[in-house]
Length: 183
Image (cartoon, rainbow, N blue to C red; front, side, top):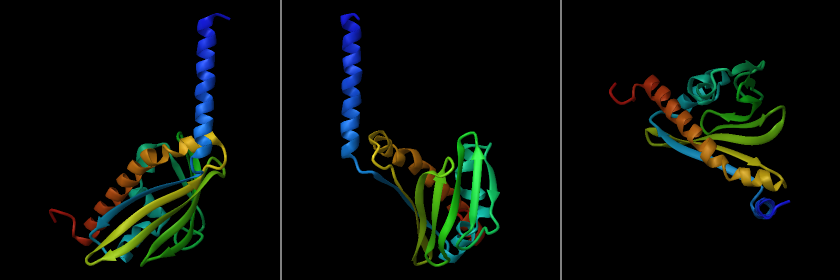
């Protein structure tokens, strides 16, 4: 093997060791969170958030992958409401673990047949004539250093999708209440 190939191999080996070392120092848990103020009451917003059949109207997932096919469980509202999906971008499932028209929802979610579990919330906080809605996802990448490095990319990957979903939720909720600008 020539000196150039040895240097390339050594460089790749050192880079891999650095990624592994840094990965072990990173936290295993990641959090993605976005907040938006919506000119509507918490219970009005809950009519869209608390019913999985209304999620395709405002969530960004179907827009980003039009091949997604959603299957709803026996319940689409309340604790235990469930949906699963499959598309070119992959598949997953989501189940409501708590739901309250005044404070929001919590859910468990996983991708690829139970892999990559996470917990999510959409919390409502009434602020006068509007509601602050915070969408949060928390997951754990475990001990794998490469997964921990990947966790650094979760906010830049998922955050803009949360922003898009919250913007769409705002448009729908404010249009229904007549507070949309220009009405």
